[in-house]
Image (cartoon, rainbow, N blue to C red):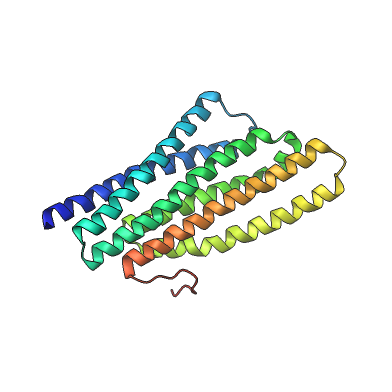
Length: 228
């Protein structure tokens, strides 16, 4: 029983790492799309990203089943159970991050006014870079049992929220002053949605970091003030 349990846990961790790497690859592409400032994405790249997203969805379902079966059939000890549950929580957030990457690529294609996109390009780029970094560090916090990386991620979520709020105010003001230009309005609304999706990646990174802390310490800090 112990050998089979250990093998099951190792298999879960191996599959988890594969899935996490695919999501990080998607974020690499997303960051490149946004920071390039281009409004066109090559079809072959879009096809690859879409293929990856389908693989993420399949892997999430498969790994979820493995986690449930391991808990029910192998009855892991408390420390292993905590890590597996944290893995399951992270898994859900990784799948949602994959969805957001697809959303962002679609938003880029919908923007019709390049000038307005360039006006906000720097803040979009910085947000894309930060959100990607947050996910990467949150995952490292889990795999390496590194509480400091988890704390860094959680703290940066507030920065992400502040950037998002400031940008949304600027977009609203721009829309009010340019309401007669249909293409411009569509672009402003699309950029607003794009920024919101980037900010949500940061939210999911924070969820991953909180799950990492649960795995490390056994403390569920969701909805609670972080203790340093």
